[in-house]
Length: 334
Image 1: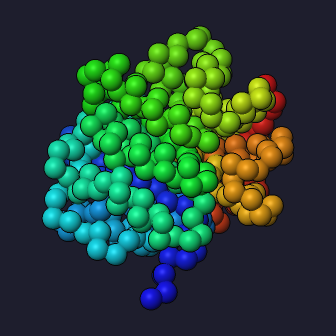
Image 2: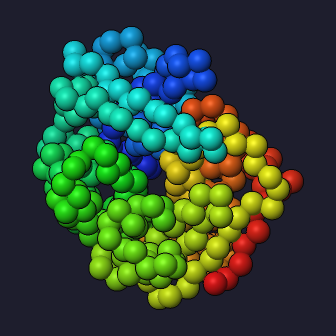
Image 3: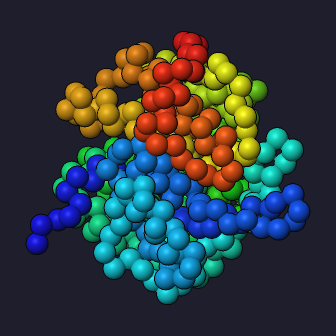
């Protein structure tokens, strides 16, 4: 039988959950979420042929998550529906819309997978170029699932993208958590981390760019995206180049849920497009300064558009192009 997913270039493996976001009246509003799920949906809406690898629940929330993936053009493996319930995150927002999270993750649907299953799913995708993971997939209890898969994908020549996206409240043993995250980052061609992530991992230099360079030196990653909240983002290469981008117009922030996920999706979207034009894999692309500026602009614009919505609402490719046409972020070489 012909493989129905022959076009898939990017896969995402990791959590899919419902964000239960506190409202001003104290009620909880459900939003589709999970960092890796958000990334998959954002990539699909951005026009990148993408597959989400983890199982989804047969429950009401799982059906909702599935519909949203399909509506975004994301491929889903056959026979990936399981009986376990959907993961939940309870999300609080501060006065600036910045989110804090509590998770309910025992015996849940998206964790019903294995390294063997993930590898087999990827081997069935002949056009696969990029594998992505991060956030809750980097927790110590799931090291045996994702790290062997990442090693296998790197050995197979795929481009590996890992989003640190730490949730320190989930794991009280920060030493064990950091070791698990660092193990995954060793396999990455592209690391994405925030300034808060760096502090959680012990990279506490007062200059977050210097802290990011220290992290890169300990992982060997050739490329790293550092997000700085309202101050924009920086893209660094292992040879010392760094570009910074930030918005030139005010962003009307409703909340920051999913902002980093949409940033990474925009960046990967542009990176895959650049590599396709030159007929190489993304990690094989010789990044020029123009390439780096384009990656950053796509990332920042995607994040800003998401922040103007409640919950994670990734923009479409058309939305990002329209924003870049009228209000492109400002870029400068550091």
